[in-house]
Length: 312
Image (tube, rainbow, N blue to C red; front, side, top):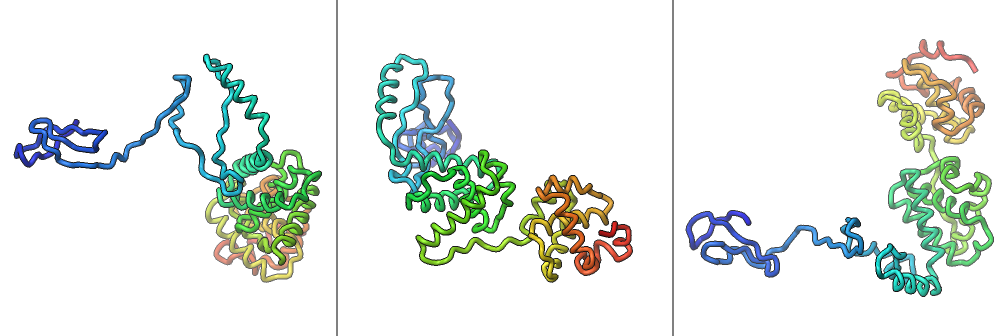
């Protein structure tokens, strides 16, 4: 019920909406004020056997082109204590007896999704990792290998290809027990398989120290000003021949920038936030020390401030 102006009654009257026909009808004279209206409200319905189940979804999940049936197969749920226990259990047993060719793929995709969620990765990276795993699986050459390492390596490569790299140590933290060495071997194996399939070398992007800065700084709770100075310092550091890994340089720059600020961070905290060993940070700091005046922005710190730093 609502109010609307009726041209026959020459006044505002109550109207009734006929959901079956999509008509808006005047309650006084019966004039159809609007016909074939589109109902934009939710049409969710639930067919659950239990009244306590308030899941409103009545449609299935999205299609998955990586699965043979598009991900649209029917799965019979387990019995839930109702009178249909016998029927449900019988159908469930028949379902389990049937062979699903995509069973291993579905399990792998769920594992990749779980790892992606734990790392806070976007859906595009998860989808790319699924595609990489599907290509490797289609070649039927990964049997007997550590599947946890294979899945973790697929996620690592997907992050690199999407320009959102994660360190091997970060991937290892969600890899269900796979070690860094195993993930490294799996990554090399996958790269070879992809190159064989495509007939050319596969690019996974170059890692820069700046790719990790914002995330590392966020882990340390640094202010925007310090983060900006650290990002500029990392970009300047690329102009010098510092033969250290980008992750080590990022950790060392963060340590230096915090030491010349009022919000000093201990070396231990920087090591925990970045996943880089304290000794590695010290060595990188030693290599960066001669170039501090050219690396650290002038608006952030002057040469006098560097005198307060401990010499390597």
